[in-house]
Amino acid sequence: MHLLVSQLGEHNAVIISQKNLAKLVGVTDRTVRNSLKLLKNENWIDIRQIGQNGTVNAYVVNDRVAWTGKRDGIRYSLFSATVIASDDEQPDQNQLEHNQPLRKLPSLFHGERQLPSGDGLPPPSEPNLPGMEPDLPAKQSYDK
Image (tube, rainbow, N blue to C red; front, side, top):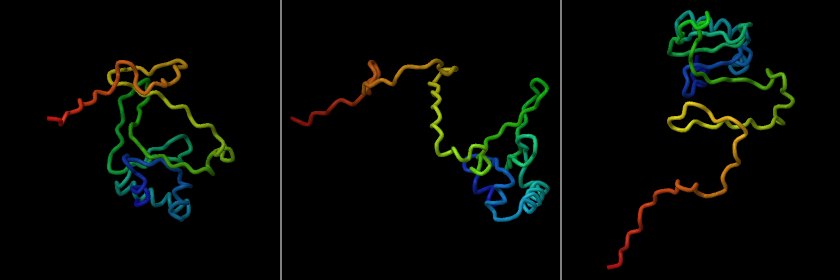
């Protein structure tokens, strides 16, 4: 429980494999499974499975997972989580240090409801865009 809480950050859940949980705590996978079962049965955490095999889960602390209404016959669980993944669980673990950085998503401006699309323009080289100069206070004169 202490490890899960220490990883929460601003979220109410942690997504981690049982293998990594065991490694971080320094116990066996079986001990982790037994401990998680106890925490769930005692209502300390809620467990939501991620994927199909059940070894990677979201461990939700101090809150019930909010299930949305059915949409196309499927109910969705909504929560925010810290995700912990180790390099030894990645199929490309030998290339991780050589991956290109991801492209940055443009952010929405106040009032916009759609992200811009297309290749975009290069960033302006001007210190201020025309018409968007900062409104600086006027200098006060102290000469009398």
